[in-house]
Image (cartoon, rainbow, N blue to C red; front, side, top):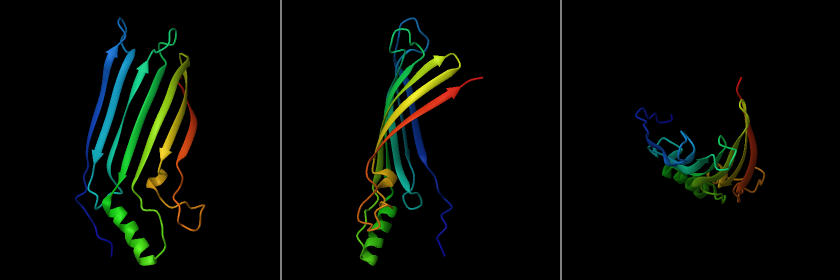
Length: 159
């Protein structure tokens, strides 16, 4: 019978602040953001998370509504989940990666093509995808999913 924990909780904080505004504008300039959270490791896979970064709106002349952004994030796998992985290796005798963290770095540029249409190319580099879980393609179980580079394109249409 699995244990039931009814007193789960989390604590988080958010900071989003413009550091420098282009003179004479309402929203162009350099901003920063950060988020952090913690939760009990005995009942949550992620016990701590942090991300942060910077954005700059209106970096190029004639592109006042475009935004360049860079950010990073890290999610810590809970100590209880890591202990479960170590126990599985110990009891099975099969070597396998131990989950620890997942981290990401992202660079993006949001371009306003028309007043109602935005395109946003994005690049992410992910370290320890899935928190360093075993690679399902490699059936030996000895290796973790490798780090990943992800390229994407987002679009938004207002109508």
